[in-house]
Image (cartoon, rainbow, N blue to C red; front, top):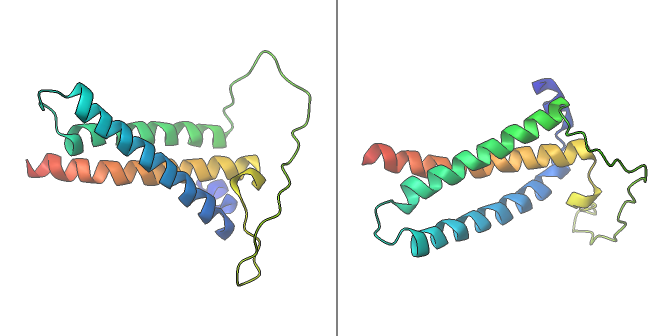
Length: 138
């Protein structure tokens, strides 16, 4: 399975992965701060230690589900649609190297799943490492 994942990765998939990471990190930070502000009123729990730990574990669970989807596990929906998906055709801005910028919508299904997997792992690490460092220090 790891060989399949390595074969899927292409350099043009870095940009959609970074965009997904930025979105997920900002939403998770907002949720952690809202939890600290409105739910953690007596300040019993630490934001970095406890909230980041929960968020990091959540991202690793999402990554595990994406890994299972890449491995072939699919949820069988009872109402299957036989309609083919239309590709959203957009005109992208060409950068200085005349390379076409690939958006997330233009990727194949396996490439999208890989971008989500990689984004969830990166986000999980970015939240779990500070939580574990604070956990060990205290």
